[in-house]
Amino acid sequence: MGKVFVTDRELRFGDCDISGTAYFPSYLNLLNGVNEEYWAHIGYPWHEIIWKERWGTPTVHLTCDFSIPSLFGQTLTFELRVVRVGRSSVTLKHEISCKGEKRWNSTQVLAASDLDKHTSVAWPDAVKATLDDWLVTDEDA
Image (cartoon, rainbow, N blue to C red; front, side, top):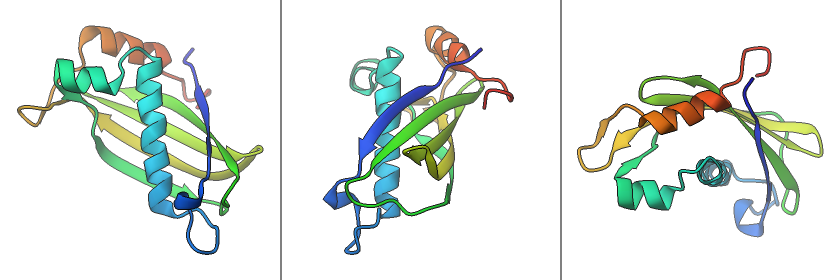
């Protein structure tokens, strides 16, 4: 059975428009920060894989659905689930809520990429094994 990575982010002034409503590009920046935190949590911090190992995890596909607006000062809970692991890609499902109320969700595909050749590469064996360990079943997703 897979795992769920959970972390919180407070909406700051700069994340919101003049009405105090979260601005969707800021949501994507927050999502990127959650991804960075997840990769560090599983043992592959971006500053090491990018600078030392010369591979990265760019987004190659992203969909988002927004349910209810979020406001300046609210704390959002991000739940990240690995729902598919391929040879060189991983599909993540993100559920974002505030105090248990769904705010938005996203499905994101990341690809393992050689940063010098700008091509996709197979996951290193240890990374693939780690991602497989986080894989959730359809029932868990």
